[in-house]
Length: 144
Image (cartoon, rainbow, N blue to C red; front, top):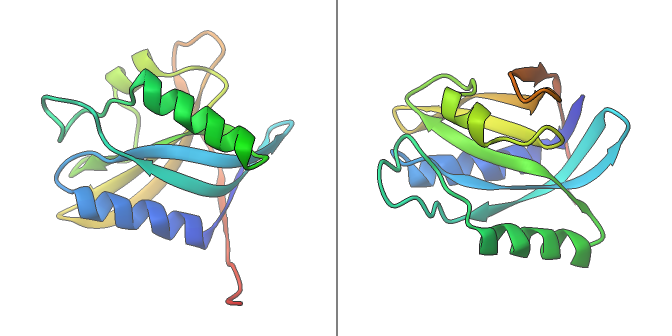
């Protein structure tokens, strides 16, 4: 199960709407315990894909290393990644399946006509054959 704050969801939605019609991407930070991932924050990354940015995103090795360093420095874990699907459903593509690793959470946000729509969470099965949808619980954060 995936737990995340509404503030984190809003950050992802704003990033996706700002980069539309291109795909956006970023990292998910938090803590995990057994099958529960508590996503406490996200960090937007630049989509490093050169071609077809409306259908593909690329996180470079340097961006990945920086994400791991950020997680370590802040006492959190790198739990996974998010990206948007402009004008497409929030479900993994064949390309997403080929590029994924089994232990991470993958959030996909559908963006329709520039407006954030459905948000789903996925984890690749251990055989790397298919994604399994994960339930998402969005928790309201109280204003300080």
